[in-house]
Structures are given as C-alpha cells and as structure tokens.
Length: 232
Image (cartoon, rainbow, N blue to C red):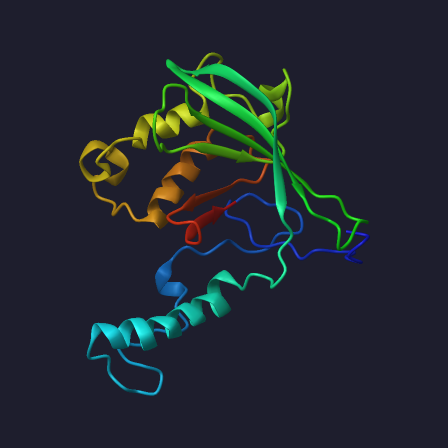
C-alpha cells in the first residue's frame, strides 16, 4: 500500500444485515433494481444499424463488436506486457477427503518482478484432485491465505460446524457433483440453476460454516474468462 501511495480504501456495501464499521448499505441482488439500461442492443444488429443476415456477417462484424464491448466494459483489457508466473510445487501429499482419496499439491507462483523489483509477489495455491483420476476432472483450487504445513487445516479458515463433520468441500461436492441440478437437488427444484444462482447457493452453504466476523466471496468460473462472483 505504501509503495502504491494508497492511504485509504473505500469499503463497499455489505451483504449482511448486521452493522459493519465503515460499510454502508446492502448489496443489491434484485435485478429489477439494477437495470439502468432496460433497452439492450439487438445482438443481430450492427452498431451502424445494419442487420446481420448471414453467419459470415456475425463472425466477421457483429461478434467482434460484442467482444470489444465486453473487453472494454466487463472483463477489462490484458496489459500489453503481462508478468510471467513461474509455478513451483512445494509439497505433494496423499489425503482423504471424506471417503475419497485425493492428491493435494501446494504450489507457489513466483511473479516476474524484473520491471519493479521493489515488489515481490508470490501466489499461494492449493490444488486438490481425485487420486485415481485418469483424465480431466473438476478441481478445487484454494488461493492464498490458507497456510502450508501441518497446521494447514486451522489456517485455511474456521472449522466445520460440528467436530468430525464434513468439510465445506465435501458439502458442496455432495450436493452438486455429478448431479442433474433440476431433478436431484432440492435447492434447484424451483430455482433455475444459472451460474448466478449456483454461486449464491454455495455461498449460503459456506456462510453457515464461517464466523460472521469474516467476509466471504465465492467465485464460479464458466470459462477461463467468464465467471460469477457473489461477495460478502
């Protein structure tokens, strides 16, 4: 913060009703209250008003316009020079997640700081995969602040509600892994399983396990660039 000459940060609204010093107002998730642009542009009309009449026009003309809008207004642009990250595996261990054998790798990503040596950035990552996986599988990645070493469990965050109970990973996987969300889960019996709703339901599961004094944010990736985040 000192290196960046940042002295104060503006705190955002809270998603919980209790008073939090420095935070004002509640986060809004009501779409009817968050739509300053009710008349969205027609995806099949160019910005010059010309209609799309062929697949070639879509790929060559309209799609690039939409991608440009997302890069400028939603995703943000990648810097022309992005520092490289060199990942190092510092520990590999065989564990059990409930009744499932898993392999957990603890990694550190060293960010190239040659352009500004005054700042050192090391990204901590914990990657867990099924031990018997023979191909691509869903993974659990935990970034930063989870601690390494024997005391890892305590450093990762508050313990489950009941001693010996399922971890948050087990609870989420048990509910949603390899499930038809519309048919096999009560949470989505009447709720459309969009990414926005899925991340909200997962947030509610985790919120019960974590001390209210800690903030919580859940991010769900649909693609490598498209994600939904429900912050607390």
